[in-house]
Image 1 (cartoon, rainbow, N blue to C red):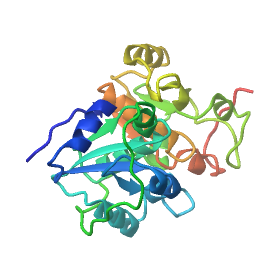
Image 2 (image 1 turned 45 degrees about the vertical axis):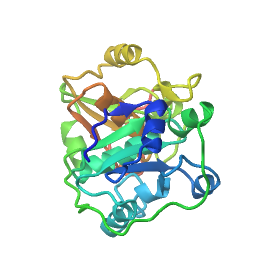
Image 3 (image 1 turned 180 degrees about the vertical axis):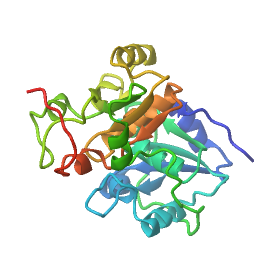
Amino acid sequence: MSHSYPLVIEISELNEIVQSSDKSKLRIIEICSEERFLDQHVPGSLHATPADTQSQSGIPGFAPEPERLQALVSRLGIEEDTHCIIFDDEGGGWAGRFIWLLDEIGHSSYSYVNGGFTAWKEAGYECESGASLVFTSGQDTTLNGLHTVTKEALLGELGDDALVVWDARSKGEYTGEKANAKRAGCIPGAVNFDWLDIMDKNNALRFRDLDELQKELSELGITPNKKIVTHCQTHHRSGLSYLLAKVMGFEKIYAYAGSWGEWGNDPSTPIETSL
């Protein structure tokens, strides 16, 4: 049986999926700490930790090393014909990063659960405890590079009117007041829209009103006709901005996966501050 779901689903729809008798081509994937998953999780969900989605190279924003990424996808049983239902428990950053990884391996069948585990718990739906089911095979995980911009490529495009660099970090990091790398500041010409301003803190971390978000982004020059490159410190927070752009129908959305963890620690890259 094939399944067709929109890019964003609500927890009521997730509950219907959980109650469904046929989930053979579905993978409900919950990204959170091992401790929290063992304590309580959505029934039938599979587990990935945030660290599973990151590189161990010293620049965690990069995709996991080939053997680690293949092991993750195989453990989750993600095949070419699998539809992935993805969420986390902190507003969508890790889920968005996971969706970026799926894009990078050419897997386009996925949905994000609006509000994730926070909304699930607030609504009072049933949880279960214990370890995740583990699969043993999955699709090929060779990265296609079609959704990622490297530092070198970004350096070559700075100043292009067709490009907008979306910095999803906090204002303090963006202005240079707060340093999480050897150097503080921002990529020249970047615009700042904090990932926390995407989510509604009074509505279980669901997306804020999309029309309002689109208006605010447009005022910053983040528009569908531009090439949008989003980043944060480790392409975790910018996982949510990457996802939001997709939800809004932006077709030219890319991740600078190295993010400030790479840029801010490279003495040769240009930076701006506004202190």
